[in-house]
Length: 194
Image (cartoon, rainbow, N blue to C red; front, side, top):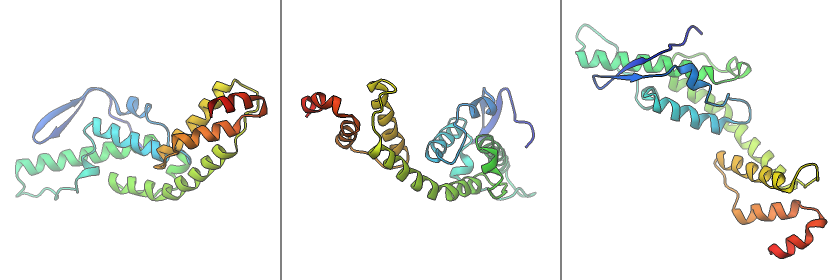
C-alpha cells in the first residue's frame, strides 16, 4: 500500500492551509479493526476520525472537475485538496480493515466508493449479528463462574452493542432479561426488586 504520511500534514481547505499534527497511522490505531462483527462501530469511528482530520471532503463532495489549462487557481486548489483527501481517506480505511476482508472488497481509487462497498458488504452481516446478540441476551444465564456484577455488566454491554447496530433494547426489557438470567438463589432479590 505504500508509506503513510507521518508528521505534520498540510491540507488546503478553501484556499487556506490546515495543519494536521499527527500521523494517519497513529490515528488508525485508535479505530477498531473492521471484523465481521463490528461494522457499525468501525463505520462511525472512521467517519469521525476522517472528519477530525478534515479529510472527509471526499465522503461529502463529488470529485471536482479535472484540471485543465483554463482552470482557475481556486479550482486547482480544490482539485488538489480533494485528490489528497481521497488518497489519505482510502489509505486510512484500508489500514483499519482486516486483511481477509480487504481482499474481498472491490479495488477502487475513490474513497466514497470504497466506503459504500464496505457498507454494502456488511449491511447483511450487521442484521444477522444483531439477531445473534439478541438471542444471547435472551437466553444467557448466570453460571456463578464470575461475580454477579460482571454478569450484569456483560449483559448491559450486549445491549449497548445492540444499540450500535441501530437498534435499542428498552431498559425495562434489559432489567427483565437480567432478572430472568439469575438462578433461583436470587429469588429474594428478584422479589425485592419488583
